[in-house]
Structures are given as structure tokens and as C-alpha cells.
Image 1 (cartoon, rainbow, N blue to C red):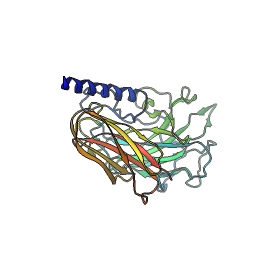
Image 2 (cartoon, rainbow, N blue to C red):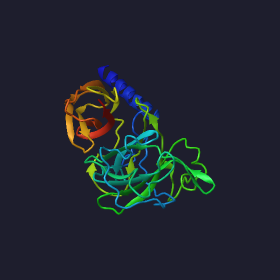
Image 3 (cartoon, rainbow, N blue to C red):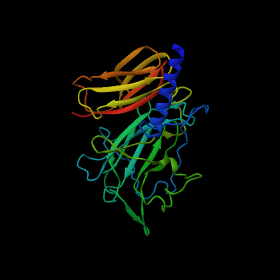
Image 4 (cartoon, rainbow, N blue to C red):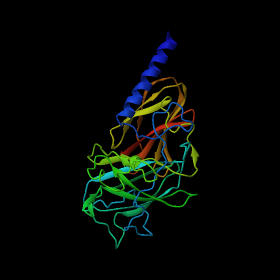
Amino acid sequence: MKNKKKDNRRQYLRNSSLAALSLGIIPSITKSANNTNSTVLCDEITEDYYGQGPFYTVNAPNIQNNQLADTNEAGTKIIISGRVFNLDCSEAIPNTIFDIWQANDAGTYDNSGFNLRGKTVSNSQGFYIFESIKPGLYLNGATYRPSHIHFKITTPLQSPFTTQLYFSGDPYIANDAAASITSGTYDATNRIIPLTANANGDLEGTWDVVISGSGISVGDNNIHLDKGMIYSASPNPFKDRVEIKYGVFQEGKVSVFVYDIHGRVVSQLEKQQLIPEKYEVIWKPESKLPNGHYFIALKINDLQVHYLKVIRKR
């Protein structure tokens, strides 16, 4: 009977995680490398129909503190983050360069300087993140182009790949020559992402990039809902402490780590053998740890199965 209870609990947790995924509570990452029992996709990034476009400027500077937009930039603040994977999503790719440019809130590009232009790099775990404002609209012929951000993405072993990112619910997507394409070389389907308001009212979106390259192994699958997941980290943003709730779906050696944006481990919160169950752990970072974005990672038997992003803001 005891084993049956464990099996029932494991199934409950498994179902709960799938429900959370369907509600968009956790980042959508991708299919398994061997296509086994996966509910998510691992689709290679596609080019945008408009390519680089006329507004690209070379030699954009590296952005500071993950901020593409200055703090006084007019517009709705957005936070875009994700992870870079190889083509079968078995490896995360560090040191991938994101050369980013976009229009301001009024739909105008800075063509004489580098406002809303800059570069960021995925960290040692393949994660990237930047803050900006939601780009404004501008006329392209007789109609407006949907809000979009341009990217020139370069992995360590590949030439630059240029594309654009769009946002769900934009009324101008349907009639846009690029964003409306749903198949073939320029299929934009997986480059249209939802934006969700966080506790501060800022909009957050997750965009995982699947591209040719090699990096660090993330196991046979890159998201393992049959093994465990992080349910929540709250409050988020936080000041002095954050409560992390997670589930373990199979017995194993469980670790919970906190990484900074550069991929450095700043804290190890858990490391022990655990049975399938729900767990909680508190992270109380040192006062000297700076404000910014951090990633909480859950590992089971040394395999990273899930992560969540948190923001320290004091």
C-alpha cells in the first residue's frame, strides 16, 4: 500500500506540473532529444522574412546590467529571457552573442547613436536576459508593422543568424508580410511569444533559442516534468528572502542552486537524497549580493530538470 501511495503522489505531482505548464506558469522549453513522452517543442529558430532590415547599426556596445533601455526610457518595460539550445535540445550553448536593436515607444529607431541597441551574451549555463521597453509601431507602406525586436544571434562556432521576435495579441501580426508566415523558411509561429505582467506591472516573456551549435549537456531531455519541477518562488521580486516550492517526482539526489546572470553559483540551497514529495526551501542571500536577476535551478541526479528566474530589488 505504501508504494501505491507513492505512485499516486508521483502521478498527482506529474499531472500538477503538466497543468502548470498548460497555464504558462513555467518557461516553455522544448521536446526531448529522442522524442520520448514530451509535451513541448524543440523547433529550430527561423529567419525573419525581412531579414536584417534597414535599421541595423554595426558595433553596438555591450549592454550594462542587462538593460537595453535606460531607466528613463519612455514606454512599457519588458523583460525577455530564455536559454540557448542546440538543434536537438540536448545541450545548452554558452557564450552566444545577442546583437539587439529595436524602435522606441514612438516607433522610431536611433540611426545616429546606440539608444535601444546593444549586445548581451548567454552565460555559462546558456541563459540570457535583458530589460527594455515594448517597441512602438511604425508604418510600413499602408499598414503598421507589429511590435518587434531584431536579433543577430551568433553562437561560438556559427555565423550570425538574423531574425525578429513578436508578441502575442498584436492586432497587426495577421496582416504583416513577415509575422503572419506560419510555415517554411520564414515561419514566425515560434517567434511570437506571450508577455505576462509581473508583480511590478512589467511585462515578461520567455524565448528559448534553438540553433546550430554545441555546449553543455542538459541530459536526454532539457525539461523533465517526469522528474521534478519548481512550482513557485515568492515573493518575486524579493528583498531579503524568497521561498521556493518544488516537487520531486522520482527518488534521487536532489540539489537546488542559485546562479547569477553570468552563470556563477551564488548559493546551494539543497543537496540530499529525497523521495517523491513536495518540498520548500528558503533563500536568504547575503546583504552584499547586488540587485538583479538570478536563476534558481533544480537538479535531480545531477541533471538540471527545471529553473525559474527571480529578481532581487531592494
